[in-house]
Length: 345
Image (cartoon, rainbow, N blue to C red; front, side, top):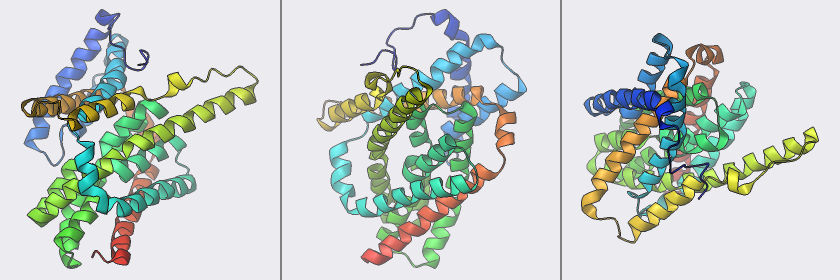
């Protein structure tokens, strides 16, 4: 395992303590608020509170080492912890029939993000964040690719906020549209599972339609979430090629290293999932592991909020939000069209 990616020791802990404690303290408040208002959720509260503290109270530079540690390494640990709660065998077996729709919607999301992003002059990394978040699993997908493409923290915060906005719209709008279109429980579950981003929003929309739709939407969503693994590996290779090409054009020696660029946390995520699939994770421990993973994600996203510059986000303007709207609309429509073509509506 690459120690640079996920350090197992904590040298200079005293330098990180203040920033870590600040992120953890805010995350505890966000976690509590997320349970009070599950439609919004702890991660969104975390990033919003982090942005508020960063831009209203302006913590001193002494907090930065701990904040940076939380936004990078704790984020990676949270993804690994999620692996212990995901049985790849079960999801693959129950979600296979939704794979064709998922692949079409995912491709649509990336192509739309690329085309609209260039037309709107949204820079590449923000295009990727919004595309991945819409295509796969919202904030969790954005969190997974952040250590690979290394965007500015305000870009990550902007992307998550944009994804959340359309999650909220989807929860309120999808059930109404589903009834207007006379979708079956299976049809609505497949639509919600492939076109709504975060799991909590998929569950909320699905079960507000019917119990059967909610059950199916959840399974589809879990299948869709596993696709973050190949996406992360592809992005890692793209980043590696770009770094090597840039070094060659500048005439300098390339410092490319597959070991350095490889997303090791994804490998350990797979190991954790294999352990879960093999039945080595006691059932009694699974809720605690999931709770720990959820809280670590909130801590990490809180730290990203604490690093975000609101002025830079404002300077970005409305274009990323319009990009998110375009990608989300394309995914929603393509999901329905594919179902219509294959006769599942």
